[in-house]
Length: 391
Image (cartoon, rainbow, N blue to C red):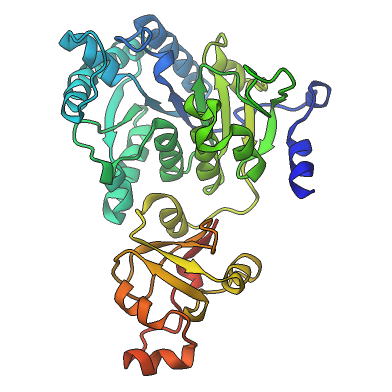
């Protein structure tokens, strides 16, 4: 029943949209993510005219007093063309070589076209490791904010030349959300080749309704995007919904809109409600908890019983050893672990107070038994609530 009500609340008809304005209208600091389809020639080489249009629109936003960071795909496609390959390779070393060559072309293209508007650009390449390490995270933040203060547009991409699976962000939608959190931007704009989010895949369901306004993090949105197995998710809609959920943790709204719309960024900044607008919830995570929720890699899992799940979700308590049914993986004290219920659904993430070896010995134990089992007790909690994020 709750789920159906949630769906109705976000499936607003066109008549109800009158008077609602774009999230971008009042935004001062904006992250714009442009997908490969909007900057390349069908995935083979850069579309220079498209890059010229993006530079012009971002220059117009700058003239309105907005700060803009650009997350742009396209490096591998440009590299494939420059190297002379007929098709996109599949071997990691070839993809990394294409990225290395293509980054030169991508940076040159943006530098040239922004330069025509009197705007300087900077190339910033990041990996997940840069954002998971606290010192590197702060350094990246200070660099980006300094660039904005100097009137320079950062052009950001994942560092595909050196990235491995262990340090890979995964996609530029996610990277856009992480950058949004990093610089505390007001809005993340994800430009794609789709109009936005529908209640179902409009290509196969004629009854699918367009979702123009909703709240980021609403579970119904992920169901609409279909999860990992849907046709829409293969086109990337699920990653956009999850990116909006991440961006909302620092108080940022997200707009998912078609980059095929003429002058879309300028029109959004003027208040026109184009695409799907996902507002953040009222609560904003502290920077430390953003780091736990979105930047750190999980070192293991704790399986919780129903009582512990209820206590975390309803009462926002610390996680005690007695509520842990099983310990999976190998981890050290202070590493991030994922907390799941007995069905395997993720409930929370946190910095664990014990190593995996110790955690296995004390799971299901009451607090007064921990000392007897280990011979000492650093803390009564498996994860203290200050180091815990309930998702």
